[in-house]
Amino acid sequence: MNATPTDGVPVPSRVRVHHLREMKARGEKIVMLTAYDFPTARIFDEAGVDTILVGDSMGNNMLGYDSTLPVTLDELVVATRSVSRAAKRAFVIADLPFGSYEASPQQAHASALRLIKEGGASAVKLEGGRAMTEQVRLLTSSGIPVVGHLGFTPQSENTIGGMRVQGRGHDAEESLVADAKALQDAGACAIVLEMMTAPVAARITEILEIPTIGIGAGAECDGQVLVWTDAVGIGDWRPRFAKAFGNVEEEMFRSARRYSAAVRDGVFPGPEHTYES
Ligand code: KIV
Image (cartoon, rainbow, N blue to C red; front, side, top):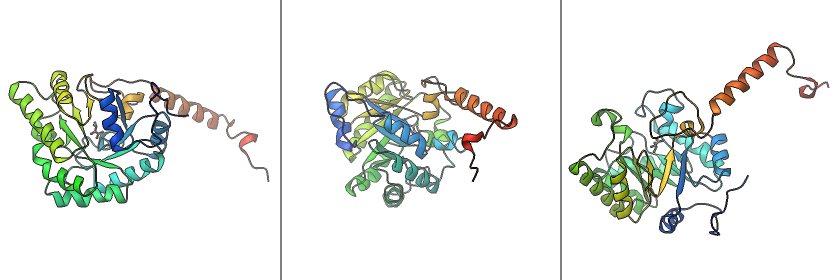
């Protein structure tokens, strides 16, 4: 399986930070999916997904937590290492988990170093706008590309008051625009816009030189991201902004049922799976 070339533009053998900016300039959509393990990342990489986010959504989607808040840096380092080993072409971004970067730029730097050195990520993502510019500045000037994250920021769900659409009303819109500009000025290489009204996301996308990646932020963003289990159809609930493009849950369920039946009926393993000597 190979990535599909688009419109004669050469597909980079490895996506790097400048390719994301060039894609924005060409009006070419950036495709991002989350992944938290080697086999999933391998499939997405071979399918031509441009960037893989090792998100702290791993907490809800893989680890059985009911939010992203309990996810630890150690858990993200292990997941990032697995994904980075699989991603031959995709740009790997690792989330800085809750509690690992907010206190100071130095704390952010120490945490980000682990995701880059031990995890093999090419960039880190953090949540927040103007309050995080010192973190973004230090990381960027230390050679660590930073992706910002604005709108509904799950790590702040307790202060936001749950999963709510952001950017409604003049003040909320202006605040998001100011946050986006501040992140860009501090050196962020891209910004995820989550669950905000489409006109606000479109305005931010228009104003910024760096790419925006939307999730529940309308079609005008420079790229889109989905949590991979939502995208392939695992789980019986997904947010309104997500879409299942397959039914992997059904396929896994059927495979497990067929395997169980074969074992119980004594037809697996057959002679072709057995070592006689
Ligand atoms: O953790 C994550 O997967 C994310 C995406 C939802 C953008 O931050």
